[in-house]
Length: 374
Ligand code: GDP
Ligand code: ZN
Image (cartoon, rainbow, N blue to C red; front, side, top):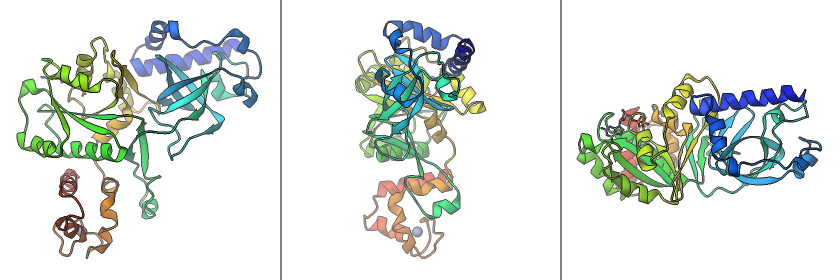
């Protein structure tokens, strides 16, 4: 019986490592690399009632960071090891609606590799059980479009999904060309950073191909945003960008093809980023699982690449627009037309608010640009 259970655990891990690395050996190789610090249970802890609350209470504990999800639990990074963790029945999130997100600090009870309790499917897979989650310093969210009916009762909490917690920097990568700079997408990321209380850092990559549209970039400069011009291929500007990321938790954003993977390899030589495989599998939608990849900076700090943010690269939906401009919500009911787009209509309360400086011009300009992308 125990042997069968072991097999099933191995199967899940194999499947997981294929998902993350696009190969058979990834997780094992990584485990080997960190074996010196790998979390192993002392044999004396391996008896007793695994899975019962009493059993969990007596398990050794460790702190880790959530890096992804699989059906039935979370993937938690402890040191450099990734553990598959179920969620303890007694789990209580510190606060907030989304119980767990990438970047959350959690305390885990370490269970053993093979479990005797055949009745617990989740325990069968778990390396550990998440007991609790720490408070969030920051929360990067995106709108969660839902049915028009529910949106009627506009509710911030159910209308947003936390993509990542406790990140410091939103690293917005764009290219001067190939693909062309998408003004609207950058606007969206800037708003998301602002709402989540992250510092946006705009990276304009591929300067070896040209300097990009100066006028567009002046708009962003005027906002006082930290802009880095670089080339992941020639190495120009990489050193300076690298220095600003030390000791920070950065999360990567930007359209496909702008050079995010190349950039990570340039910043962290030896990172050997092979995110393509994850992305392809992700897009095929074969699994409901999403795993982030965490790149450690040798000097301290990390860059997190999480699939949740890639969806933001897709087309914006009309449903989502109010989430980006909550300050319009209180004013829009005063527009003459209740389907006012706040662009050209007579007696538009939003346009009046912009003229009276009650809504900042830059916010209204972002609104117009985002509307254009619809
Ligand atoms: P990602 O989808 O954002 O991860 O983009 P990739 O890192 O996969 O890069 C997409 C393509 O752009 C690849 O062919 C890279 O070689 C190329 N690329 C990345 N950075 C640069 C750069 O700074 N200059 C030039 N010319 N090409 C680059
Ligand atoms: Zn209006």
